[in-house]
Image (tube, rainbow, N blue to C red):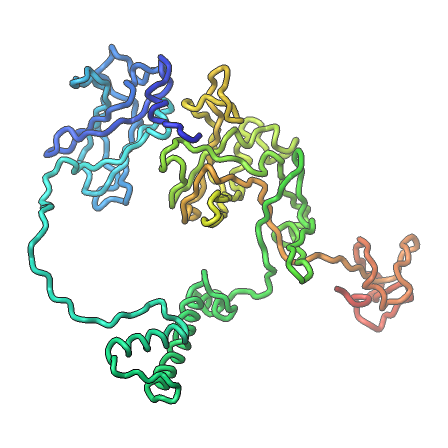
Length: 498
């Protein structure tokens, strides 16, 4: 992917070209601003499947071909209404060019708008462009620097905003004293000035700690004390239940093929110098009881991302991104469980709708942090990149077939909070939930034992060591163990549990 220029690859396609892209948008009359002209990198009437016939121009374009939306929500107009979109041949100094002329009911405001052409024959990377309806408006901006005399700066004390503890506060006060009262040179602890500086430094140290604690405990995202979180929750009339076990999401690595990870399967979180913490797959004990399972596959261990362009914008997933492209088609029918009612053979990609996946970025530069971000898939589209004529391994395809790619989308609430370099990022597709703790089964018997039931223990006090799967049945209103029955006591556990 390094050195791949997508614009050059688009312009240098062998004839006849497969796709085109938007070159720029021109506001025809800056005073009127109702008519726009869209110029293309390759004339749309010269494609393998032309978007318009040359002889038919001028002619109207298909409805819904173009959309115009403000990128910031608009100051007064979010999406101008399009009343006409016509294919025309426009004379230019370099010769005639095929343009798409668009007329709107009213021009947009001063915000930035994004024009998008919704057609598969327009490359995904070049199917939209940002522009302004006011690009031709005159400006009263004067770039000549002013010659006003600046106001005289009053001397201000130099404040070290990084001073947060006793030592840094004390050093800052000593520097302040030496700068403003150079004749004062006493630095012995018994000096009254030194004593006051140490008192102020100690108070500053305590105040800094209190400020940090208050700032951290004032928000749910950073609070560490349970009482702080409960107090914040009560502000919105919610009383959290403190009895829930810790839960997490795990990225599973599959050795070969595909398999079901069944709820209740134990995993361990390893710790240094302390016993490991036991977890079980699933979100609750109910998942284990109903036999819930999670399908995982070796091809989903780590899926490479596909950057559409080698520019900085193409290599990085920007802050706020809600979609990404994967190399290859996933999921395909061969990767899904056979005879599963959730699998649609006609549309296997629907199996991933609602699935949790993780974007993991491991920077090659050790000074940069590694990134992890969980998203829940809301859209899956299996397509190809018509300008990337290689196979799944990155080698040139002998037949010139385009690379298969998959576009995934996720909810805007899970938009990326940081940039991710796509060359260093992979998608972890085998994500399963886990909950802390281990389920332990105990048995007891209510009523007299049946003739064919085995004796589990000879003493009721030893029942906690038994392990079996029996269904308690009431018989005679008493409780029983292998050592005998006692009707005077109420039904209950025959021994201790753990």
